[in-house]
Length: 147
Image 1 (cartoon, one colour):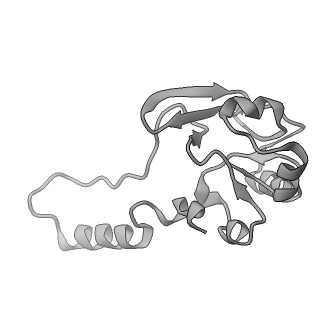
Image 2 (image 1 turned 180 degrees about the horizontal axis):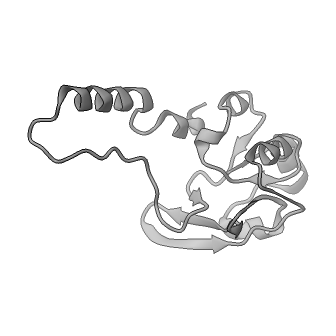
Image 3 (image 1 turned 90 degrees about the vertical axis):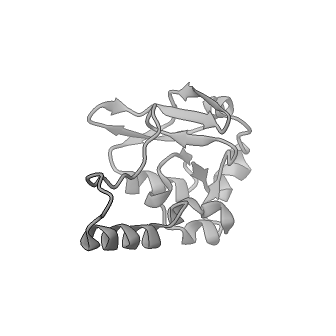
């Protein structure tokens, strides 16, 4: 979740998910309707559920990110959607770093599934090693706060 410095200067920085009720949120609206936002803290599995409000809803993530860059509101997307240079150059500011915000009520991840076998084939091992090396642990796209 992030916003531009201009937006935050004008409307303030939210301190908690509840504070987002007082902010302009840029909301993704897809085939299953308007997304809810779910916030969790590390030691509490029960999410805070928010139905974000704002003046702009779109079924296009790029439109919502562009609106955030223009100071129109706060946007929540997975970190891999964002150009990380926007964070490095302070065009977008990450918000609520002590919370994990998602649009899904359940934790989701990337999984590699292969048959359980004591001896993996060389091809499977090569693909697995490549994926782990390229993505990293944690995934490189989750390191936006390190800029």
